[in-house]
Amino acid sequence: HGTFVHPLSLTDTEYLHDALLGVDEAGVIAFVDNGPVSADEVEGRLGERGWAEAQVVRLGKGEFVMPGLIDTHTHAPQYVNLAYGQEFELLDWLQQITFPTEAKFADPAYARRTYEDVVDRVVNSGTTTACWYGTLHQTTKILAAVCHRRGQRAFVGKCNMDRNSAPSYQEESAAQSLADTEDFVAFVRRHCDSPLPPSSAVLPSLTKRFAAPTSLVQPILTPRFAISCSDECLQGLGEMMDRDEHLPLQTHLAENPSEIDFALSLYPGVPSYTAAYDKFRLLRRNTVLAHCVHLSDDELDLIKARQSGIAHCADSNFNLRSGTARVGDMLDKGVKVGLGTDVSGGLSLGILSAIRAASTASKTISFHERDSPSKRVASSTGSVTNPDGVTRPAGFFAKQHLSLSALFYLATLGGAQVANVDERVGNFVVGKEFDALLVQTAPSSPNAANGGAAGSLGETGSIEDEVRAALEGAPTGTRAEAHNPALMTVEDESSERVFEKFLFSGDDRNLGSVFVRGRVIGGARPLAN
Ligand code: GUN
Ligand code: FE
Image (cartoon, rainbow, N blue to C red; front, side):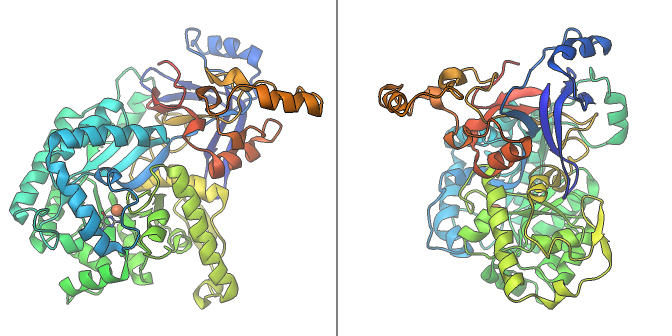
């Protein structure tokens, strides 16, 4: 009961005040009472619905609930080499930094230690759904197992790499790569299964809606990129997708100019990098394409025609000097877009940072449009349907930097579309599963167990009193002050302002509880399940 913030479209964020949202035992949203429902009315309303026994979480000042964040592209093993190799662009960085690190994941004990650490940190940064890359090793099964045990919603992929990689970090043959992939997929489906429990009141309508497996953790095919996969390997993966329409795929596309030249040199007769993947029937509605920084209009049209989605990894695109992806154009074409951290091309584990990087990238592009407008954008006419299903004037998104609503959409519902879980999560709609964050922005938030320490807001003393209190008060830097100080001044602000402040300056300390399918799986001050 309290404030809920969720995306309705790329241009519309809904703020619900004094609302009452019910989550059933299966973790499915059973009702959303838009409110206002007063604090006194809550028990009565629950009684009317036959929910008298429900556990009630009352959100107070500075607290709100929003959908969980979705990372559509990240690499778990690269947590280890995060930040190393600032001097490199992509291909040299892979050879010098990343492949030697990933090679260490042949060791299962090393893999388990690292994967437990990185999944913990990513969950606590608010990522409720992640599209993970492991390495080429079977130890990627450990990554899937860690996500499963932790309760994160995850797509986990063992990399296919049977050429142009490194002598000590490459698969023996396409046949071996494909056989290991089949084994990996079977393992994840057998051992990391968590179907929706049948206790959900709305389950019958849900089961009708998707034939796809409802497990939280699912395998995803992961040809690293065209350069590192032989034709035979890509052909085999296309055939696996032919046989199994529920098997998704993730790969990298058009990230860096040298990478594109190398990829094109491997496919002399093929018109583009995108067309090379299409040749092997790898572009489908459940395909996630990371980066897409340097795409022609024709390539974007092909991606739209195949209904594939794009993981926009702005932080990585800056850091590896890859470029700035034209997200506005993607949205104007109706292509699904989500955000990716791309650790460790990107430097931050959480999607809050990806939101800020995506904002900066779009503002950078907007300088260019302002200073030398492209004819293409200026001359766009007519109307188009954007990926949120809304029809807007052509060029709508290319003409401006990404708004708060657009960024929020990309980080939640947009990412859910890219990962093909938008019928399950992404916003608060009855029948969807409750993947959410309880955000706490004020020191006096009632659900912040240790947050009451700084409860002196509103009491004012003389300058002398306050100076004395500042000198003699509790030492700073203790756990009791675990709230982000940047957020302690918002008590009288509107929810819109608090939300904007959180999105652009909040961090893990503000994430009290992280929920997946209705269950608390992490957070700085997690509520009891
Ligand atoms: N292209 C192929 N492999 C990688 C990788 O690990 N990171 C990034 N950013 N791009 C890639
Ligand atoms: Fe990547």
